[in-house]
Image (cartoon, rainbow, N blue to C red; front, side, top):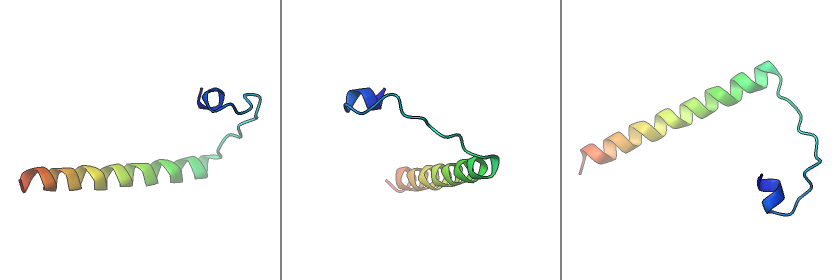
Length: 47
């Protein structure tokens, strides 16, 4: 969808991630979400 909006080719092959890379990306995302959630809770409680 974004490729079409920005006028880029929509016939580009998207490679799949191997299991190790997918697990690493998911772990990174969960870590970032946890840090964000904790910082939001701290900032809401301190007000």
